[in-house]
Each structure stands twice: as C-alpha cells, then as structure tokens.
Amino acid sequence: MNLTKTDDISETSAGWSPDGSQLAISHKKKTAPVTDVAVMDWKTRAVRNLTNEETPSHLWTGHIWSPDGKFLYATRINAGFTDASVYRIEAATGQKEDLTPHEGQMRTIASGVSPDGKTLLVTAARPGGYPNVALLDAATKKLTWVTDLKWEAEAGEFSPDGKWFTYAVNEDGRTDAYLGRG
Image (cartoon, rainbow, N blue to C red; front, side, top):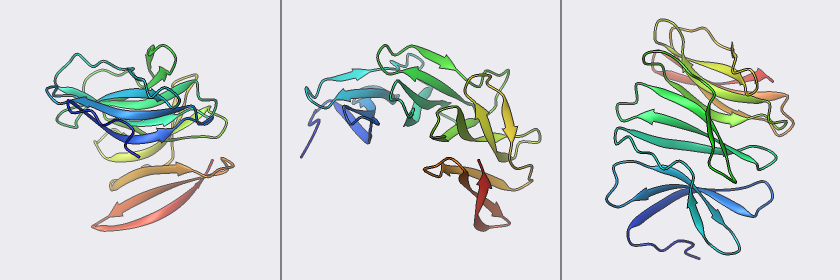
C-alpha cells in the first residue's frame, strides 16, 4: 500500500506513533535542499510538516516518538555533519525546543528514548572531539556520560522496560556491541 504517492515530495522513514494514529516521516520536497520531519494522520492521510527548515544548509533526521505520543525527538544537523542538536517537537503544533543548546560546533544525535520519556540516549562529541554515548535528561537538558573513550562510540536503543540500553564501540576498526544500565 503506497501511503503517499507524491511526485514532488520524497517521504521516507515512516514510524508509528504509540497509539497508531499517526506516522512520523522524513519529508523532502523535490526542489528543496533539506529534509524535514512531518506527521501523517493515519485516517485521513493528511501530512503536516512540523519543522519547515528554512536554512538550506541544515536538515532533520532520526525522528523518535515520545512514549505518550505528544512529542517527536529529532536531530537538526548541518550539511557537513559537524554540528547537530537534539530537539523536542510537539506533534500537535510543531513547536520546537532545543534540548542541546551549545556554542560553536558540537554534534549530538538522538537514537532512543526511555519508556518513561524522561531520558534520551544520544551520541555526542566529548571534549577532544571523540563521539561518545550519553544519557540526556529531557527536563534539565543535562548530559550524563556513559562512555569516555578515544574511540568512536555510538548510542543504540533502550530495552522495552528501560533497564538497559545498547551502544557500540569502534575500537581500532573492530566494532563491539555493549549493554549499559538504564
């Protein structure tokens, strides 16, 4: 079943809302240089663009629903993939809040949200530039570092009960999977 079939828009990476009433999608107009986050109402198939990115050098990626379905968490990243911030986007209105405000270039990318919706699992650059894994408190915007490595570490997902999370470490060209305590 083709849900969108639009000639002038590319819609990819569909993800169900927790109640199954909406799909979050990556939304890119054929003539636009950027990708946005949109939601599709499952019953009507109506699509609403939530981010409406105006800066041609930035795009949105990795939309993740909050457990209550009220918010989407997504990463706004520059075209060079050197600067990224995690945002909380209200699904009903598109109102955005930067959860990782920073000065200069820093890359923080969300990959999962805890079942209680309070914590995001992120990959972020530690001082020194190495990507490491952290837990981001959605209320306080505080990062709690899980790893402190001089290798590439990448956040994964939370377990369904939130007691565990996964991540990977690329150590000298060999990548291993790890389990962390939520």
